[in-house]
Length: 296
Length: 296
Image 1 (spheres, rainbow over the protein chains, first blue to last red):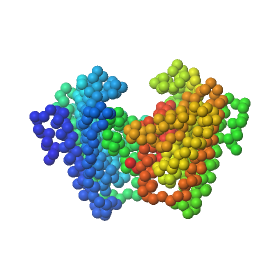
Image 2 (image 1 turned 135 degrees about the horizontal axis):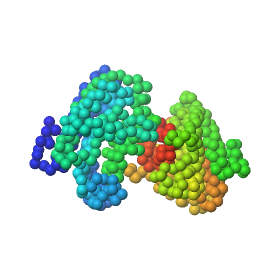
Image 3 (image 1 turned 90 degrees about the horizontal axis):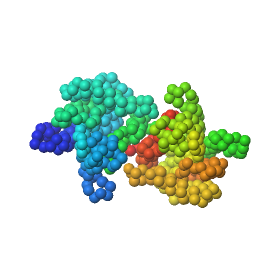
Image 4 (image 1 turned 60 degrees about the vertical axis):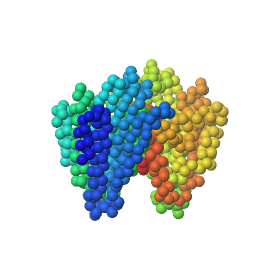
């Protein structure tokens, strides 16, 4: 299994992290393609073609500096269970702009940075299968180095067992590292994925953490890997529970309206979007998070 | 004709401006409802019911201060020519938050403000009828007072004559007040309605102006009225040119994708959206600008 890749110990942590994000990407894509194959033939989209991920590489444009600042790979699938899912990995390096440095730990005096991560957003055909987001990353600046990430789920019609199991999966990952993590990172997620102008949560939450450097970055990396494993364990189970259910036009309309809130959050508030657009990231990759079809 | 209302000269300028925005709203709504009735019965949406504007009032929530800070009226129509059009008027007053004052002329020392305006966004069923935006406003702060506004058009498939006529209409309004206005306000519009992350203009432009106070606010108000009249003159003509044309599924898909750029602009960059959400405006009214259906 590709996840074993990171057993390799003669690499720098940044190299191990980058390899891990790739391996996790591979395992997630395989798992999601398997779900496409498991859709019942008599379900609503049962006669559609199975989705397969398509990969495309991009190279970071460093604004005419002539220096390539890394790049990434987008993996996108338009399937019959997954209406649109993107799993992006990227490893970029460069120098933060003057007005951005003060906002990033360890970058105020010297704006150079290195960042690697995986970012995933899935929008589903079925109004009964929750949309999901997962992201983990490793960032190094001149004066600091840390891990960050999280996952959150956005159902249209909340299923209490789904919510409980999703939270439990990440609680398990957290508790095996530090019992203070789960309550802290769950609240961080609730606070972050909130739309003040609607006075609404984006979804049912999950966990969110950033600037995690406990003084033992190997452990922080191990925690970040467990977050990825927890996601890979729980989300496909939740998809399978609901993917063969029928839905009505009204259910689908409710999904399309709910997605409008997702767009509002991502474009008005999401720091990942801002970070990406301000650091010369790939626009298509950054805006991959936007749903395929939306109504307001 | 209701536009004659503003011949009344024994009112304060702010009262005249507020009445004008209402009168313009009435005339625009009447004109757009007439277009609904003029759609040919054998056109694609010819068997749909005629749209009629529905009005709803809102009162500004001044964050538990107990003081009502004005409010507004939304007029929304979901018709057969106009897929979704909103014509909002509002008159609000209050005090800018500390961090907002420095950004507003005349508000740094004393954050009290009064603002009245009309804001219109139309998204059309037909991919051959351009979407349009028009907005004019009068703002008074402790130390300043001005008019602002503009209009811009967003076709999916540009028609050169439409573009020329749209620009010509606003050039006419500008030139009758100051020959420097048109080139200045056209460029301002091009600069403003631009998506840097896409390196794309939002549409074909129009005019945009803000903080207009020449020392003769009566003249600035007269110019602002002419901008409204120019819009009311030209846009219905452009709608009529194309509204009876047939379109294909591919044309419609192109429209839905183009609307994605509109959403990106409004949520990532539009100052009106930011201003509204930060000053306790009505969320539904502010986000009325978002298209009814979008694809990415």
